[in-house]
Length: 226
Picture 1 (tube, rainbow, N blue to C red):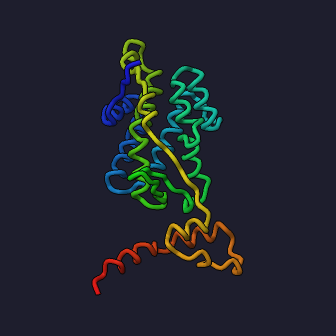
Picture 2 (picture 1 turned 90 degrees about the horizontal axis):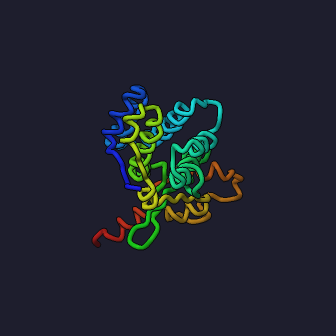
Picture 3 (picture 1 turned 45 degrees about the vertical axis):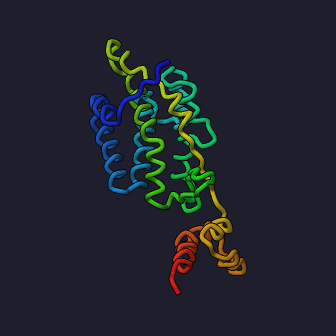
């Protein structure tokens, strides 16, 4: 099938005809991204997408997992799109759940750069913007594909969106760190927070996340002339 997709602005125009409210919210996602407010952009995108899926299926009681499963059964999305949303190791549903139900301080987006993996903490706005840019084009088009089931038959044929190849290119990987791993990543000694203090793991993670990255200072001193 031809890899048909639409620009985000076109998606917003068509979504406006389905729901002005959700079109305005997705427009805000784009504004947040431009303004450097990555966390707001990502979380609002996840919230809008879930609610639009529930609106289309008229099922507000089921979980996001069940609603996406229903969309697949109704042939509203392809097998690859279903796995991207619901089944892959780092699918949209699982990443969305991490934002809602996990310790965000320990969660990192993995990006492959110069033959190595770089971790981007999702407590940083720039990291969330990186995630938003990676998934938003696909999510916007999925929204249009899903709502097109409510369009008239004559116009519905124009929205035979297929995102399989885009999804194949979209590499998503998340790594959740322990407090010890976070210390190493920040260039701090492993005994920076003594186990004798009895501080629970979740609190250690929060405290370490507050600490500045010692590697920055090491790099600065290494470049300081004598």
